[in-house]
Every structure is written in structure tokens, then in C-alpha cells.
Image (tube, rainbow, N blue to C red; front, side):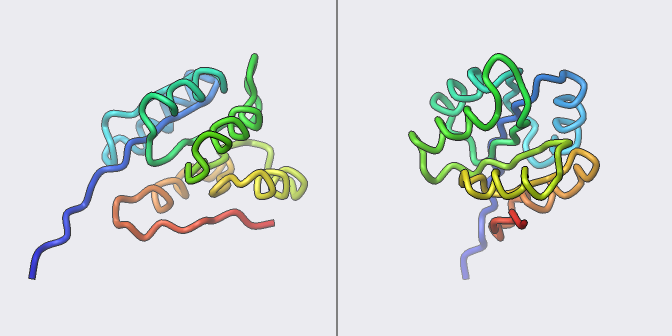
Length: 131
């Protein structure tokens, strides 16, 4: 019986806070040490087009292009993109908006460890946005 080969996912982090990007990168570095980082949604759109990563860890509030605008654009070009909202805004309205946009999952910045199970290379990925 052939053994299953696990492929490391490529991860794109889009957050305007450099320290938050570092914390997320450190958290997922053993899953994929070659993480792509962007400081705004416009750069995330361009990076997604170029690299087509397996996962995008997207902050919602960034300037000049916010994460919601970037998500809408990425999903219009790449409907199967797995974009995970990573935000401090965890109210029901924000969760509903993220789900309606087609984001794949939602993680609060106070619970970053949840990212590990979402992007693990086991192949058992499933959407985790709930309202």
C-alpha cells in the first residue's frame, strides 16, 4: 500500500501590524516555514495572484485596502481560495459578514492556536465559520 505524502501548505498572512504577522508566522512556521507576508489587502491580492497559496490569513481592518475588499477580489478571481479571517472583531455581525462573503473560516486574534488545526497538512480541512 503506497504511503500518503503530506504536502506542506503555502500560507499568506495579510495584516497591517508587523508584530501580529510575526506572531502568526512563528505559530505556523513548522507547518510551512516559507510564509508570504503582506501589510495590506492590495498586496494580498497581488501575492495571491502570483503564488496561489493554500491558505490566506486575512486581517479585516487594514489600509489602504481592507481585508474584506481584498477577500472579495481574491474570491472573484479564485473562487476556491481558502481565506481565514483573523481579527480582533469577533461580534456576531462581523462573523455573519465574513461568512456571507465566502471566507472559509474565522479566528479571533485572542485564539490564534485555532489556526494550527485549520491549516494542518493532514488534509482534513473543513470550513469553520459559524454565526
